[in-house]
Length: 306
Image (cartoon, rainbow, N blue to C red; front, side, top):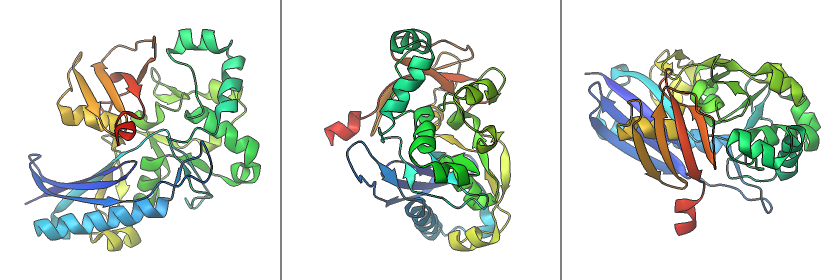
């Protein structure tokens, strides 16, 4: 029998699921990890906490199911988005991950909106105002406040991209995850070099792009040993957590909608049309390479309740 292994690496922990080839769930495991709040507006996570959770959860689902390493046909990650980890040429982090919850870059957000005509015009065109939690302001914050780290960084990785690099050795960005950076051209499916240049960022720091369904590579020797899997096990591009939630809900057809309630809460409609955002509604890429998601989000629905 063959199995598929998936990890949801979220804000509070990693959920690992082992399914058979038909999608039937065979085993589930969860491992928690912390978020660090060094000062007001700051929220960070440690990539080693993620990796320890991935390893423990993987070994746990293998133990529960009795599945052997040879039976695992491939793995992929569903990951939290809007976070950044500057890494060196070897893929090693140069600092802790700046979380999607982090709002330190509010001055840089105002700077970006001023450059593009002001907050009112920016909101009218994009659909919502930029905040310090968005990625473009975070890149600019790194350049301004941690110039040595910015200079040494070979790439800006997100959670999913870092885990793909850790497992396969390739530095990549998956379409659905990078679509929330504000620097991805969803028509051409490329980095928007003109915007990257406009804000004085280095194009070389934005990695090669892959689709959710692409095989990024095979498990390298060391991570395979830690996970209890075979070297060379296929690793696929995966997608952002919101995009994977859409797939899991069954909302996969044009015009299908779903409501998700977790740490954040959001309403999403799947579409083949590139719709311009209005009144706080944004358009991001779907896990499906042929579709987009129109999403309206409140970032702390479940967190506030908790």
